[in-house]
Image: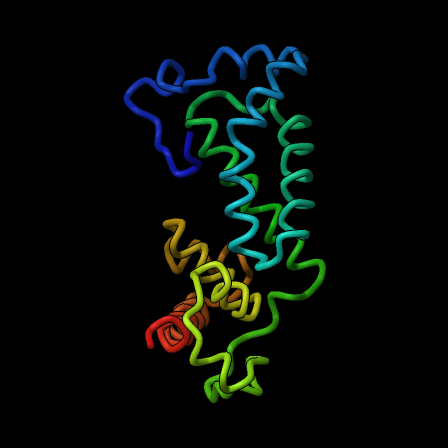
Length: 184
């Protein structure tokens, strides 16, 4: 099950874990564990991409599933469970970022090795996407990940509390930085 899966014509029947969801909503811990094991890798991937930190991502995954357990009664099956968990995950990560004010860090227009915390020889290295994402300042990383997850500039602006133009500028800067780091 992927977190970006959209429901088909009959979301309730299309949801592969519809029975597990119903049982979990009635308090069945084993059913919720089934949902957790099927969904945790995708939730972790979103948390990792948005935070750039494995430890923090693992903590956020736990927070997401605690909230999912607490709020499972509000899930009505109008969308796929994966879609509901995706939104819950993004909201929890953004909340965490707001509380720690990490989203305030932006890539500034004059990017140098010192400005982004890299040595010049590190810029020449081929980096994988996760490592490159982790090097982005939190604000730019958040905008990029949300954009890659399919959110519009307006939605990103609303979720992060920045202007849509700022979201577009951060996305452009993040793409430019990634291109320089990833393309030899």
